[in-house]
Length: 517
Picture 1 (spheres, rainbow, N blue to C red):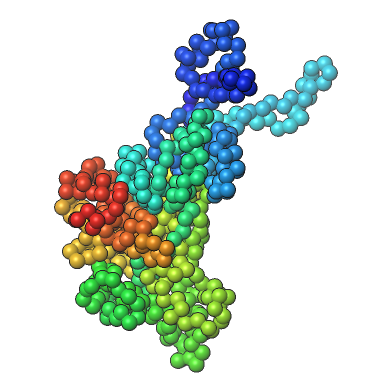
Picture 2: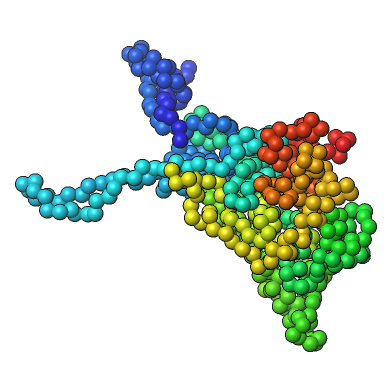
């Protein structure tokens, strides 16, 4: 919260003698001067109000705003057409924890007669409870560093600690100063934010759901192994007659190589095996439609156990559930038995109808890091003097996939950052950090493709998960992966190696290929 300050309300007269109201912020000493000399300036009035003071200009989507103090902004948003995207949608942790922050006033309700004699109470008495402090999990230094890297782009960075679900870094870019929303004299800056075509006021990691790209191959592989459709030693050729593969590589002899090369035809076959496999208990059926329908229903149930297609329950005011298509969805859209695997194969590479938010993508990687469970991501690590978050943010949620299948993903995720892998630019072996991750390139029909990367470090005992999404940045390995590597290195070492220091400036305006890396 902020400190009491003073504002000056004045009236000035133009050459036509028409009075125009003005409001000017004053320091305490300036306000005292106006009070002492009020006889000289009869049109000046000093009004005190409570304001919030931000010690650092970062994490605007997290901190949000106090509704009462943000009335000028909400009024502007109501008047502007684009304002409907923002009004009341970004109260941040303050809106979520408002009841705990404000506390409760105490009241005594005595019932007395005309002579003042007590006769009990006319209503239950209430005990005063002070508001409680919130202790955020955000790493302020890491947050400021991440915002500098991505400030001028469109996209997000989400970093969290997998063992606790605590969010360490949360960037929605373009970024802005959180103080602008409630500043008395910030009308012009707020209008620019509201009208900006880059829509900086959107809370991208929580509310914007997008196709995850090849990062989703990790989920499909884990589910396929759990359902017995493949094993970690399954081999499929890079048959580009099935689906295009932009990476030139040898045929993948196992899952580790497939993840290293991010082979699209391989994962086409992985999901096809899930969708078209015939259960052992069923003889070869004449109606393959029924089997296909049942298999997609099963696939959907296992995928949703990762916390997808639902609200995670993060402690922010607004969140999107994303979307996982179901068999019923395709029945409605294409007609029952009128769709085959060729209609839905794009799901195998994280494209098509599937949509995930940034928070969900980071949570999927936390689930892999934990070998099958996650704690709902959250910003508040402790409420008041308790030293712990709310009970819901201490509960483990388990997927339907066994831990052994998550362990089978790790070698391929580590190999992806080795020589010849799609994410070799995110390799931190030179500073003794083993990283596991997966790149993604999301197709975009309206411009350059979007770049994604999600991973964790150290690979054997993860302390940080990072998910990066940069709009119109091309291949994930050339922009999103290096960006995530910088975040991991900054958090784990506190500094960046000289060989990667120059990346900070490059990533603000392009990718490493454009800089001649």
